[in-house]
Length: 398
Ligand SMILES: Cc1ncc(COP(=O)(O)O)c(C=O)c1O
Figure 1 (tube, helix red, strand yellow):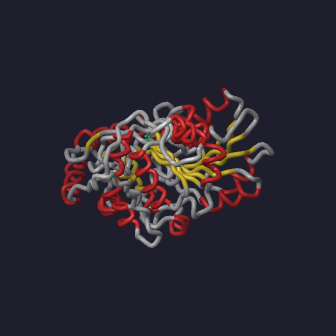
Figure 2 (tube, helix red, strand yellow):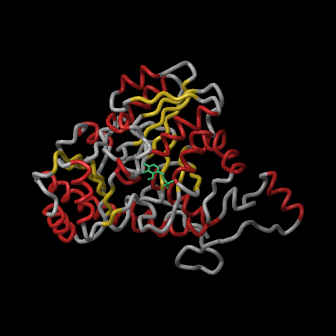
């Protein structure tokens, strides 16, 4: 028995009920079908399944029931027709790009990308004859100027990691449509609740589900979402034959994660907003960047394309790396790590961790200074977080 998501359901309802496939046992919680493959009642049934003449699963690398539930729930949330679950966010991004590109094609990508994404477009893709131009994605004219006759894909993340710059997705999609290119959006920082790239004109959305979707530090996971035509024409064979499929056990953790996603993201955003307000008033901090604040440099685009602020705050310590390290080391409730979107609050120093592979110049271009710190709000009591920041800042010399 399956629970087909109702189009009129609001996200919180869809995320509890959407996509559930109940077995003959009528289990309450979704079952984990931890199987490599499937059996057939007869040779004829196997033949028909392989010919695509009857519905059903063939092999877990192609698809399986627990993954199917996760994919259907994600489709209902995102407004997509099809989804494919992958073993990590990077598997999703690599598949979403490479499945639709070939030697001689060209990508235009925003330079403010997560480090591994930059490696894929700058280092891996050229090995296969796919060229890439990186642009400052905040300005539409840069996307337009970078277009070549062979441009096939525009790739961006918004807000960006770690400096929370915002890119006008509808504007980029309009340019892409004029030249028949497709827009792939890494929507991790916005979460599926605060930004709908497909509604803004993007063609493909990717997530590291490791972040808010699991949100409890358990799973490494990703997902690709788009329309049926794109998945059938470009992704399906790539996905089936190169093998980035997610484990059904991971899919189950994500199904459970989706059930509480709205509650967690709401609390994380409230906490992030309060922490951003607090940090903005501190003399030891040079600047705070938070998409929920009126002083965000691109507040106009945020108002146009996002329905919520962010669970992340970026800020710059006046005392550079030394002050940033002192602050991080002095925090007690907040944990030093490089994940984000977790129930636990996390603090990261991008220049020495997530973005350490970039050159000093590339980091400076992205606004990542030695004093830049990224805070990912958890769901703890905000007063404990505020007290934690206050005591830690007091230990940093002015
Ligand atoms: C914006 C962004 N995209 C993609 C990824 C990669 O995801 P994963 O670690 O699940 O492969 C990350 C991970 O930090 C990220 O922050």
